[in-house]
Image (cartoon, rainbow, N blue to C red; front, side, top):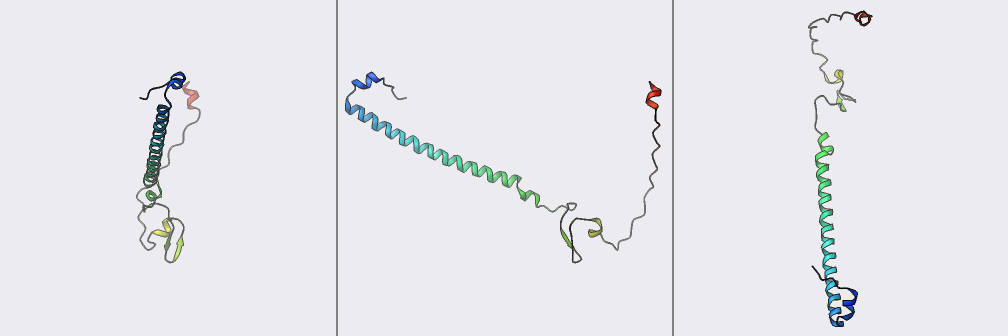
Length: 118
């Protein structure tokens, strides 16, 4: 660490020593300025790399995968279909499946049961 001089000490120091100290400080300032500039450039490069990595990780490319159930624009039989509608993408000539089971209606809730319980 450099020695700190008081104003009184600097007044008693030889002129040639003061000149030498001033020149040394100029060199240090130039060196430190160059180092700061270099570190700023490295930081800028790292930030750009981080932005690109985030774009690659979270960007649109992940949404380009074709999913069978995803809504999309497509052309079916020469007409443009705006959504992945069942009528547009299924085979209309295929036989319909038989109904597997009929659903039974649920019984209706009785009103006023809460008051009876209290």
